[in-house]
Length: 150
Image (cartoon, rainbow, N blue to C red; front, side, top):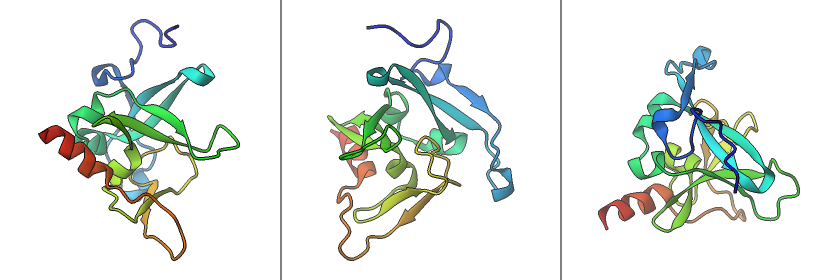
């Protein structure tokens, strides 16, 4: 297995190596800087970076911040852009956007600009379940908290 990250560069699962950039969503009231979280997509041989506001990243549970994040294709995805960013917690993959937005069962998180790697709170919206729609019934943050107490 080859390591895609360069020596001295950002390393997945090591937050102290992550880069930060200014947030370009300042006009919407987002004042904190953005953390670029590296995601090593080994299946496709590429390094991706998720954008997370510093305040949202700092509020994530330690087990999520220190985990290597993964890109998981959604269901029967037909292209490489239908995916979600997930992290390991309690022996299962939890969706990072759901944890950031504290999505409850029956709610789903929508990316406003369509970029699934943009996990800034100014780009994420919670939407409730509509009649006939099928969405996650689990509360990812509850899974992470439960794993921390076990």
